[in-house]
Amino acid sequence: MSASQPAPANSADAALADTAPAGRYAPSPSGDLHVGNLRTALVAWACARSSGRRFVLRVEDIDTQRSSAESAERQLEDLAALGLEWDEVLYQSQRHEAYAQALGRLPHYECYCSRRDIQEAARAPHAIPGQYPGTCRELSAAAREAKRAELAQAGRVPAIRLRAQAREFSVRDRLAGEYTGEVDDFILRRGGNVAQLPEAGPDWAYNLAVVVDDAFQGVDQVVRGDDLLSSAPRQAFLASVLGYPVPEYVHVPLVLNAAGVRLSKRDGAVTLRQLRQTHSVAEVFAYLAASLGSQAREAQELVETWGAIPREPVVFGGL
Image (cartoon, rainbow, N blue to C red):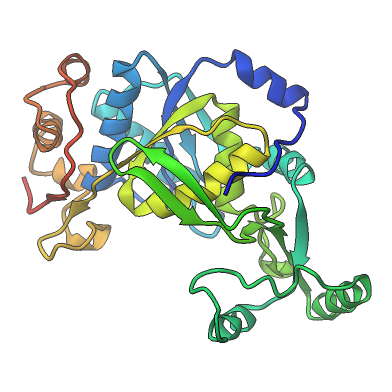
C-alpha cells in the first residue's frame, strides 16, 4: 500500500533540497564499538565516498539511560583511528525541537496502554504478532480525558503513536532487493513515569528521530546491519508522510561469534581498544578490509578498490 499524501514542507524542509547527498553512520554511545560495529562503519564510509557522497556521523544519544558523552567521544576516536573522516557530527540530544515540529505535522494520538495491556491484546484472536492493535486509536474524547487523568494520578504521561494510513510499505534494498514490511501505529514519543523521563525533554522514539535526522543531514544512503532491515518499511513510510525522500537502503550481513550469534561485547576481546592491547590498528584495519574482500591497508585505498559488498555474514574468532 502506498503512503498517504506528503505533508506540506515548512521552511526547514525547504532547506533540505540544498543539502548535498550523504551516507551516514549512526552509533548509539552506550559503549565502545566492537568489530561488527567498526566493519559496518567502514562499509558505510566506503559506500558514501566511492559514490561521491558526503559522509556524516550521528550520535544517537536520545536514550539518556544508556548513552554517555564519554562513550560518544571514545567512539569518534576509534573511527578516526581507523582512518575514517567525516563532514559533520550531529547529536540527537540537541534535536528535541526538530522532533517536536515533525510530530506536529503527523497524524497521531495518545496511547494509554501499559506493556501488559499490549501483551494481553497481542494474545487475542486474529491479533498480528508484534503489532500494536490500535486499542487507543478510536477512543472518544471523554474516554481519553478519563484515561489521561488516570495516568496523571499515577504520575505517568501517555505515549504518542502515529495514526498510520497504511498496513504495509515496501522499500528497495541493494542486497535484499524488494522488501515489504508491516506498518502499524508505532510510537513517536514514549510515555511512562514522569520521574524517569529525560530531563532534557520528551522521550522521543528512534523511528521518528532517525527519519527526521536523515532528512536534515541530507542522507540518501543508509548503510547498517541487516538486523535492522525489518525497521526500514516503517521509517520509509514515515519519511514519505513527512514529504522526505526515501533513502537507498543497504543492509549488510552482520559479524557473528563462534556460535553463529551476532557479535557482542560479551564475546571477549572484540572492541578496537581491547584489540589494540595485542594488535596494531593497521592489523585491525587489514582484518576488516579482508572481511570485505579487499587487501587495502588504509581507508582511502579501500575506497579506490571498493567492489561488491559481501552477502554472507562473517564469523569473528579473533585476529
